Amino acid sequence: MSRADVEIAGSGLAEVTCGWLLAGRGHRVRLRPRPDGGRRPLLLGESTLALLHSLWGIGSPAELGLFTHELTHRRACWGAGPAAPRIGAPAVVLDGARLAARLLDRLAAHHPDAVAEEPGGGGVPQWTVTAASHPDDRWTAGRRRLLAGEAALAPGQDDTTARLACTELAWLHLTPLGDGSALLQAVIPGPAAHPEHLLGRLLAASALAPRLLRAPAAAVSLPAAPRLHRTPATAPTAHTPGRLLVGAGAIRYDPLSGTGTAQALRTAVLATAVIHAAATGTSPQALCAHYAGRLRTAFRAHLATCARLYPQAFPSPAWHHEIDACR
Image 1 (spheres, rainbow, N blue to C red):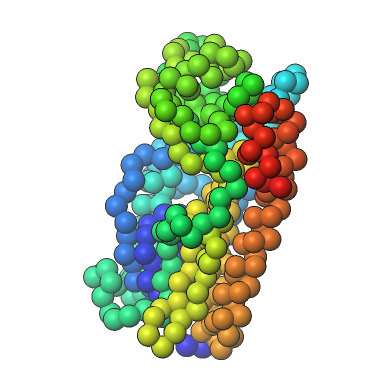
Image 2: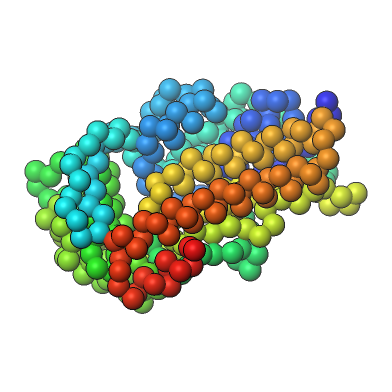
């Protein structure tokens, strides 16, 4: 087997995991981290935690010295129907940026010979793995946005249960963060000029309002529609490295799925398999086509789920475009 020379351009969970898996298989990994994007609360369910364990060998993120908050239950009300009963749904809330940083440290500690001290040193790599992609090269199924802000929980509120509720315009999710506050998220069918004002109005119209002391004082508006890159993999040539997009740069799920982190990790596993198989003599072009095909299949299945669920909750015309975009 040849030893592939791979540049990891980025330091998100998908990029770092790909670097870890490649280094573990004996390939040369050179890191080119990107600047920390700040705090990013993540809610990781049992299946995602099990995947992290299988890939990184850690029993729980707390082993990495991270602050984590354990959730034990979930309660959801989808559409105008009655709220579902409170069900057991173990999960962990943590800072995704800090998790990626700790895993990057673990990679460097376990594979010091595989990681170059000088980012970008050592000549032209055979492959580049990154989550960074140009917006013009993506296909997006809709235009919905995610509004997100943090606020204090009201006194006496349960901080071990995640809750989902709906209004006529949006679905909202409340995630206790373990420090007396909660992350409030809402998905709406289009852009919002003043996200904090709209998030406050949506909260007031929902069953979640009594859970918070007040509405978030600040909020961000982020793209939330499912997204797939048109060309997530290109094979190496005599003069240029191959490129594999991973994480949200390759495929992004609707936040409703709750499996975005797991899907990002799966792209890292698949990208690792492509590079390793190419090093053993399999056609890089065929492997890249397989990679793109796997992502397209997953994306179509995800859109089918969205097209089935959203009409159940949002019959209003405001959501027609989003529902049609998933069909």
